[in-house]
Image (tube, rainbow, N blue to C red; front, side, top):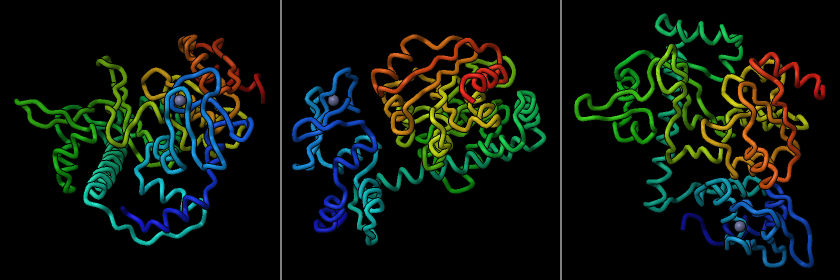
Length: 347
Ligand SMILES: [Zn+2]
């Protein structure tokens, strides 16, 4: 137990479960309960119920159930202390310094260490881009029409050619090898030992909605393979529950979210004033991401410039989130055509 039971109870009772869940899932009153599409499994008719009387939720489809804390932990992928903190803040309850249990302390310590490593790595890459060795990357990004302001805003960087420079840099800052590997920034083999996972790439830090760097995407300079390389999933990086650019898009105050294909598209669109643009993280669009979008919008515009969006994308979004989907697949070739399409579409 990390908090006194009375305090947990106070936070629970001051967060009505119907209020909290309706911030995430569209639910409708039916009899004495509320029903909506389950955020924890893929379904077309609502079997997810929330009871205001019992302050519990339950899904008749997949069996997910619990109270307001379990919902936040499941949905946000939070630990109990994180859920407690969020709900306490929401209700204006102030919390005492936490007395962590040993296990939780370890886990929290590990999470914050991985976040610190990513932050430091982002700083390193950012500096390299502005260095002489990073000029290739810098010219590439400017050549794609990105302004200096956009490069800064999105914290873009560069991973140098070859070796273990980042590993070395992180070790110098006191991070241990195991954590550097767990952050997904280094690989290992018998011959070389630890070496940088990313090299000769422009680097896109991927941030969660609280602007914390949780992973990276890297685009190779020249002809190397793969063209795009992303951080592996880690304790802090769940690709199916995050979207590139969402940390900015969520406060864009637009009527829609524009879902595009890649990191560069997102940045080009933000630069053109479409600050509601996001992209998935080098993987197929997931039900979890559709759910995430539903929290912020009722309309998604698919803006895929190079290839038409796969038909499955449309249905994942529709079925998961019940938002309107507009396809802008007639835009071809480059972000400026995309911007033109979007301007004629609505603005
Ligand atoms: Zn379910």
